Amino acid sequence: MRFARNVQKAIAYLAHLQAADGLFPIYCSFDAAMKTGQPEHASVFGTAVVAHALLDIPTAGEMVKRAGLFLRNEEHPGGVWKYWIKADPRSTPIPPDVDDTSFASVVLRRLGHSVSDAENHVLGQLDDRGRFRTWILRGDGIDPITSNHARDFWHFSPSEPTDVDAVVNANVIHFLGQRPETAGAIRWLAEHENMMGIPDKWYLDGPTRCWGFGRVAHLLGDGSKFIQNMRNYLLKEIPASGAGRPAMFWAMLGGAALDLHLEKRLVDRCARRVTSMQRWNGSWRRAAFYYGGATRELVWGGESISTAICAGLLNRASMTGPSQ
Image (cartoon, rainbow, N blue to C red; front, side):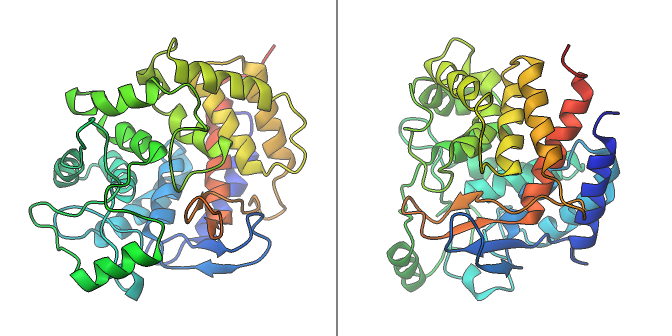
């Protein structure tokens, strides 16, 4: 298999990084380049993203199972998830959300767990246009946050109770699939002419948006304005020199190129750039994955996320064969 050695080095690194309870640490920074900051050992979301990226790599199976047990243990009443682990004080004032819940649910479903409660609660977050609201504020079995905590959360974060975020909606669609309840969200994405112009407070970089939207591209339609715009973005960005572009971004672009069935040479270019930046210990350096609002003053990423996404791209690229 092409890239097998690169993938196995990455898996060995991640196995060493994973905590005994299944959590993968991430990194928090006030610097978009992530050259400064501190490790973060309390994010449910980071572990869900890493496990999701590893789902199709057979040798990562045990790691994914441990991550699945961690996610099950972090499940809140009603079958939903929050960003922070239960033991962290920061978990108390925030509501559960459809992004964490969708990622955790996809991982657990692949591991054979029932996620019907999560599905029902996510389906209950539709707004009047058929889009999914980010925050889960009510529902059967859900523990409501107190008025004081709610006031503090909405005041000190960029979030609002009625938030609707584009990549978050794509992640929900990835979880729920095509069905009558997701038609409004699919239509909302497909009708936008600019993937960078559609609102999202968390996923702000082009490659990260491609990573999210690519997984549901087959539902948006090849002829949609949105997919045409995304295809043009990839055809421009992948051949470019990409000086200073982190490996994780190359992996995201390559994954989206596969999702949109672009030429293999474009995928191979991304894969080669990824392999050239792998470090001696099997990891790839951390890069900005998501932000704490449009001001970009706070950013999260981590070697765990970068390495899992890069390994995921190389695993997928190895199955397509080299370009001629």
